[in-house]
Length: 274
Length: 333
Image (cartoon, rainbow over all chains, first blue to last red; front, side, top):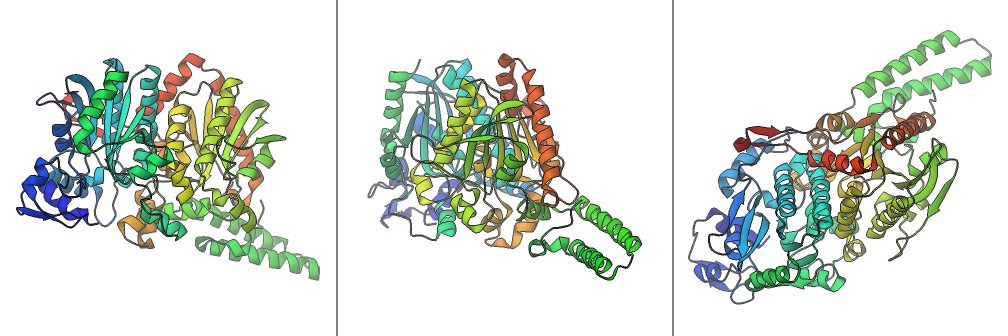
C-alpha cells in the first residue's frame, strides 16, 4: 500500500527525511508542513494515518487528557503461531510503537467539554482488536455511564485480531453489550471513523454511534476490498467503501476534515451531551 | 449404527474407515447371494470398524474437525428442524429490503416449549445452496433475525439460534446495505433482549457472521463444529499469502469445541454420534434437542431481572490480559 512508507516514518518518530511524497497526489511535501497541518497533505487534503497519541494531541485541550488503564498488557492466550509467534510479534510491535497495545483511552476535554475518549492506534498491529483493546473500550464505555460523560471512540483498525481468535471475536459482543448499557442510560456516543475501519471493529462499536463521523476518503467496510475481490471477482465501483460512499448509503452522518473535527465534536456534545 | 456414509464424500482421513465399510458391505452381499454364513467374520469387521472410528475421531486434528464440520452429508439447519420440530412456521423478510434465505426464522416448539427458532441454512444440493447463498448471510438476513427476536421478546418466547455459516457475505450489495451495521446492531440488541437466548454452533461458526446471531445466555457447540474469528483458509491467505498455512493455523486458532469450552467462550459441548453427525443425523438431532430442551428449562428458572445481568457478565469477562497496577491478571471463564 502506498501509505505504508509515510506511516513507517511517522510511527518511528524519526525524521527519515525533510521531504516526503504524498501517496495520493504525488506532491513532494516538506514534512514539517504536513505535521503542522495535522498530518494532512496541504496540496490535496490526503489524510495520513496518525498514531493514537497524535490524535489525542490534536483533539484534546492542551494537557487535559488523563490516560486510564495504560498498563493493560496483552498475553498470548492461545500460543498462536504463524510464521512468527504472537508473543514475538507483540514484543516487536511494543518496541516499535512504544505502546502496550493498539488503543489509548482516558478522560479529556474538547474545547472545555469533558468526555471519555478511546483512540485506536494504527501503528500497533494495524489497530487490530484483541482482549486489551476490547477491555479498554468496554471500561471507557462503563466509565462514560458511571461518570455521565459523553463518549468518543476514534476507530482506525483492520478489525478483530486473528492471533487471539475467538477471544477477539468476543470483544465485539462485549463492547456492543456495554454500548447497550450506555444507550439505556441515555449517554451520548460519537463514533469517529478514520482510514481504515474494517472487519470486526466496524461490525461492532464503530457502527453503533448515535452519530457517526468519518474522515474524508477513509476506507470503511465489513469485508476488505481484497476479500471481496477474492470472493466475487467483480470490479469494485469507484469510491466503494469510502466515507463519502457510506454517507450516500446512509451509514455515516458527517464527513469531516481533520481540522474541523474538534469543533464538530464540541458542537454535537453541546446538542446532546449531559 | 449406520454405515452408509457416501463414498463420494469420504474425507481423506476417513479412507481406512470407508475401506472397512466397503468390505463389510461386500461380505454382507456375498452372504446373501451365496447363502454362506459370514456372521463371525462380519462381527469381527464391525468391531474393527467401531474401534477405528473411535480412534480416528478421538484424535481428530483441528483441521480435520473443520472438514467434519463441512462434511457434505452433515445435518443442516433444515434437517434439524425436520427431525426435531413437529411444526415450523417460517416467517419471511426484514420489512426493509428483502428475504434472505441464508437465515431462516420461524415459530416452533421444542420439548413442548414454544419458541422462536433462528438459524443459518447452507443448502444441500446445488440448487438449494445457490438459493441460500451457501449460508453466507446478507444484512437483510441479520435484520430478519433481529425482527424475529423482537417478536420473541414481545410475546414472551425464548429464542434458539443454530449457527452454521462460513461467514457473513463479502459482496457489493452486502456492503452497500450495511453488513457491518446489521451485525453490530444485533450484538447490541441481543445483549439486552428481555427473553432467554440459547445458541448452538451446529457446523461452522465463521466470525462476525456467526456471532451476529450468537450473543446468548448459553452458547454451545456440537462436538465437531468450529468457531473462530476467521476461517483457517482466510487466515492463511493473510498471514501466508496463500492456503498453505490453513492446517497449522486451524491449530493456532483454537477453534474446536474443547478449546473454546476451556476458554469460557462456550458453556457446553453437544455430543455427536461416533464418527460425526453425518453418520447418524437422528442421533445428532436427538442430542441437540435434549440440550435445547434442558437449557431452556434451566433458563426459565432464572429471574428475568437477573437474566440480562448474567448475560452481560458472561461476555464482560471474556478476554485475557495482565494488569500490573491492579496486581490482577484477568482470565477467562
